[in-house]
Image (cartoon, rainbow, N blue to C red; front, top):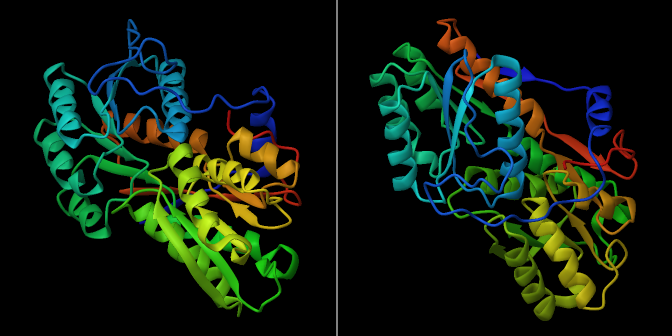
Amino acid sequence: MKCLIRRTAFFFLVFAAVFAVGCGGKSGQSKPGESSDKEAGTEGIAAAEGPKIGISIYRYDDTFMKLYRSELKQYLEETYHAQVIMRNAGGDQRVQDRQIREFIDSKCDGLIINPVEASAAGTIADTSSKAGIPLVFINSEPDESERNRWKDRHMAVSSVETDSKQAGTYQGQIILETLKKGDRNNDGIVSYVMIKGEANSDASRYRSEYCVKALTDAGVKTEELFSGTGNWNREEGKKLAAQALSVYGPRIDVIFSNNDAMANGALEAVEEAGMIPGKDIYLVGVDALQETVGYIKEGKIAGTVLNDHQGQSQTAADTLIRLIQGEDAETRYLVDYIKVTMNSTFHNWKGND
């Protein structure tokens, strides 16, 4: 049964108060399989009591996952006095597979895995189940048939996810809330550029599909001028946007980016092309990073979609502890996205630190 985790505006406003304004930007990536002592949330701290938890993150240089893993580690240690062993898979599924085996050999009580490849979920689930170790997947979307298999076989496996279709829909709705519903040049068509996160990623596919679907469902005609894969990376997003601008220039009404890092890069490209963001072209992203929220307040970016790393990480930790204690858990928990625009409930919110 699908469980939906909802967070209120009040929760986020309180949460915002603990963060300072400003964005840390992209961090350097550690070598695959190694833990970086220079980055918060990567070192293991032993506790006298509490479970030993092995965590593998698909890449440390992903801005959103940096926030996620830091919150996850802190919550596990402070709430459950856990011994957290966190590793960087470096974007290599083979490295992650080795890390999982090491977690099992070191007698971890539970695993939290952010898979490099979503298709590896079945193999990872079988490996942890055979070892008798509960498992929670994060920031991934194992398909329904795989989740049904966990349930049918009574496997201690769950996943904490977001609905990428919802994120895409909210992006489209943000554009519909702009002047002329995104048709900046008033030609009757919203001509857009699509900067995708990653090839073969369900998150990229659904965010890209549903942002456009929100427009067409509202009766708006659309035209894709350009699309490219930016691998969730700011610099790659900037290069793709610059390439699109060099070819299509003022024909572009909207640049959709699958995440804020790429949207921020696209903003740089727009300004370097001599265009005025928010006037000559609309931009929208996902993640609600502090830097992006700042651009929204300045009128440079139309909006973003809050990807609640705190709600997701805490739900993942709570779910894993229940499984470790032998309690039942759903195979899937969903955490809602929330629109963030100049006119939204979160106009005073500072963004994800």
